[in-house]
Image (cartoon, rainbow, N blue to C red; front, side, top):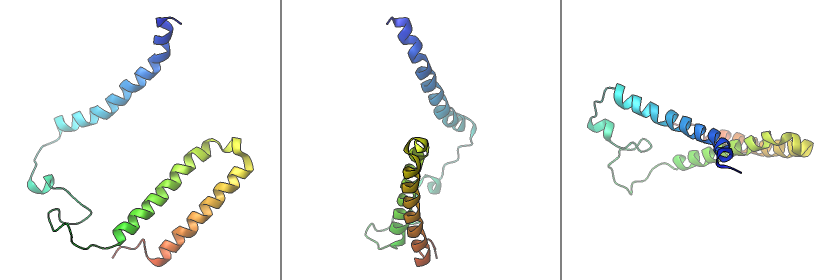
Length: 123
């Protein structure tokens, strides 16, 4: 294996890295160069879940924030399981399909339960 062979093998990876860097850095650079910069105290302050940023750290707040976060994590993990399953579906066959449908039914029951309990309602 010569150096030219290895260089040819790594060229697609290098091109991919360069394109990824350009796509990540170019929008930031264009925004910095082209956008009008008018910072003020309100724009520079931290935004924390609808609360004022500089209140007492020990104040009580609604448990719905936690509940909504847990529901988001559950349904986010569902999508994380669906992508690899869809890729290998032809290899795992009917059994894999049935197992995923069972998983989705259990998830759907949990979603309906949360909906009926009002966990998705914000007042």
